[in-house]
Image 1: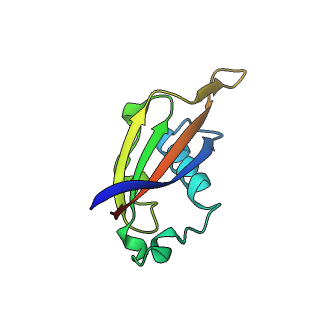
Image 2 (image 1 turned 120 degrees about the vertical axis):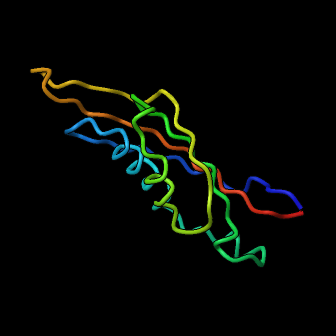
Length: 113
């Protein structure tokens, strides 16, 4: 059998104050995941924990993202996190703070024939 792509979920998250790319990344993944109730694993006779999720995050300062913290947001199964340069960084008028916007894509795969 082989891991086959079943679902693509997308989301957006922000850190309004503080410029924390991990916080924005986690919120983007939550946005992608929390608007769905996936039943595809059960429909194929597999447990929810059989899902493998490949997460891609686009955010400013990708090297500062805690990938393990992002991965910990997955409610079922396991997966991988890849972080790339993307999103937006918007400084406030005084230049003392920044708002970060992150994008997330979560590809859900199952091992099926």
